[in-house]
Image (cartoon, rainbow, N blue to C red; front, side, top):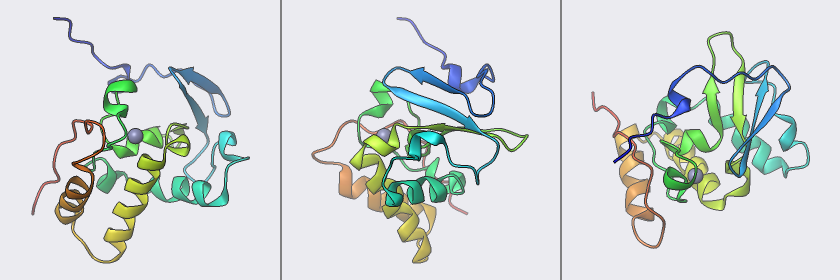
Length: 150
Ligand SMILES: [Zn+2]
């Protein structure tokens, strides 16, 4: 059996600020910073743009939250953060992904997770709540490591 190493793990994403690239059914776009939203959101509903504006700052939480939309298989996402942000770079640039704006499941999981965090839930509690809510009737979740409990 072939084991495919994901390009997402490498640094070979040769985009420039403002540039877009189609990846499968999705579009990735690089902007100068986490405060500069990608142009693919320009015609999106304000609520959706707000979800992107929040998720980009919640990598620590969302990289431990699986997505149940099927994107683990269809787009090789590792967690629900990947549905919105492909990569945050050391120089501050961000490569966004338009997958999440087209997907009610991704949007719901991100909003619910951040909402629970704002109510004071720990990453483990949020992970449990999402797994419990989506375990039936949704696609296979992304293979996402559980949060470390400290
Ligand atoms: Zn997803």
